[in-house]
Image 1 (tube, helix red, strand yellow):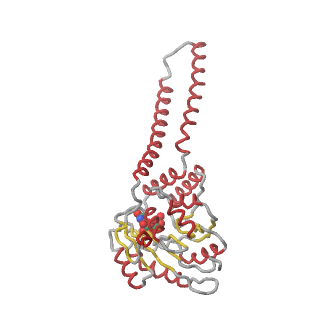
Image 2 (cartoon, rainbow, N blue to C red):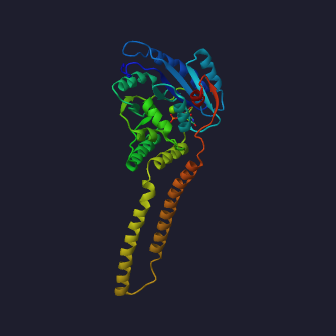
Image 3 (spheres, rainbow, N blue to C red):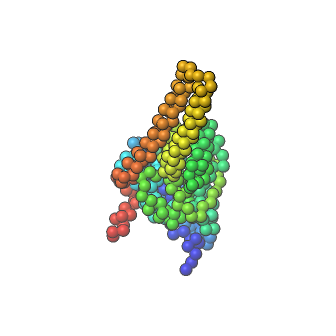
Length: 330
Ligand code: UDP
Ligand code: MG
């Protein structure tokens, strides 16, 4: 048996796209050039496919992909029935990729495909996941850098499954990891969290992140906030459990305060003052209760979504990408 790491049977690049008609052609040109230049240690070229997942685009993204597919059959696509979000689109790509190696990457060229060669070299050393880490995030705005930083810290503080800081979705996944991700049943697809949970041997390669080449970002702060909540609620139950401790602490403080008031009344007698402290206590406790209820609601809402067991995404069309289930039947 030859070492499976020597030759790569097939490399799948999966690319979620939403309204990216102008980004498809430059992406395909640069990515094909990089992929064609790859070779195994014996100098043989590596077979590859590019699988686009059209996440409910409303522009001519699919037409651009069809054009690319007609020029090169190694380029294929899935089109989802509506916008399901990037995480669901990535899941669709992972479910349909055929390669021994799977590489999710954004279409906007912020993550340089030239790093793929380095990733494969790490994989040959025996790593199952090689994630890209941005050496600097100078191309992101200051508030985005700060909030991203804060998020990684909060996530890794709350969750046992640490996600690597400043790693995006650009990474190389071995088939073994892909199969684990495919078997994960949850609807909430915070991919970075799923990758972290899956374990295996993981390592990083560093790169500089470029500006977005064409088009505009699809993520505003509200979407990022929702992604952050998805990430934390799916990876950790600490926000739920903390309220017992907060409650216990407040109860202890209240008890001490009650003793203090009791003693003071015995010594100095009662007076009618104390309205401000009453107000503060009421408002503070009201706030804490509403906050904890809200967090409870976040989790309950997610339980509801999970129990519905709806599919994560719906495929509407396929271009040059056979349905894996139909393939299994044949
Ligand atoms: N994307 C997607 N579905 C969405 C939003 C974005 O598939 O609902 C894709 C988008 O086309 C791009 C990638 O996800 O290929 C990353 O998006 P973007 O570059 O806007 O994110 P940013 O780099 O600003 O975080
Ligand atoms: Mg981007």
